[in-house]
Image 1 (cartoon, protein in one colour):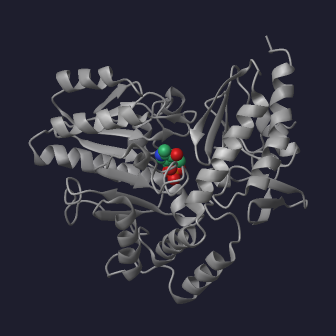
Image 2: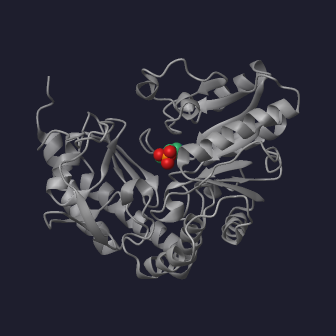
Length: 400
Ligand SMILES: *Cc1c(COP(=O)(O)O)cnc(C)c1O
């Protein structure tokens, strides 16, 4: 096992693993030494279609040859095309395009504040959650629940009220005591926080409270959206509609993109001049989004994510049954967390040595986010590599 490495002249903001990846095909990638890995991470839920998907590659090559960027001084037909696809699949009405998850969330937070101002609330507050992750800009890190993400960047942005997830009484208490609240902002399944799903009854209750209070329901689907759970959007399992839904990671299958999809209460809050971004909605990113959604549909990748996810979850539960150190295996579709009873960052390096890419988040949770093209055979391959590593890790004495 090797210590995290940094790269000369590159800011040391990441603890990197000691390999460099050169290329990939489907759910496999190769490093610069020629070693092959099974991709159980998809670049953190980004490579929806896996690597080098032939239809996707051809479409991007076509687009690069036509136009990469033109800016929003002009109409961009591909924005309309992708917006209409997202609207049709979400039941919402309008989309703002940007370039990343934090940017999508930043736009959502601006909508929550402007929505308040428009109805006479000068100091709008947004309800956010313990263990939430929303990004690393000053506003989105302030909305994030992890104190490690805050440390060193104080003063935080004000106007957030924090509550625990899945606690209806806590949010009812906020409704009784905080007249300036304008929105509730949560991940349907917390990703970085350790694969913590909001329960369906909880989401339904929050929807009802938002309606009673005139609050916006803003669901951060940056990680759990775009088919990963087996439906287009994770909240659809609960049968509710949000007012604001930030998207990013999987939407462009690797090309940087972000989007905020809004329903009627939120769609016209931002007026000309209120928001914008140079790169947002550029033709290359829009084409990547359009092709990602089309290919997902043509290849039945949502049904695949649901079926392979269920197979993977069942295999992990079966193989790890009776392991006292396994606290819980949870998630939905191809978004799975295995919580252990102790910090397990070392599993990341050991999996790498064994030819498997994954992540460990919230110290104790092994997180699996394979591409949506993952097959049951690949799921079995993943289980065959990972389960012995977890068993061996749990059999070792806990360091004092
Ligand atoms: C990754 C992530 C973000 C931040 O996205 P970036 O593209 O890294 O800025 C925000 N919210 C959630 C739920 C995420 O998983």
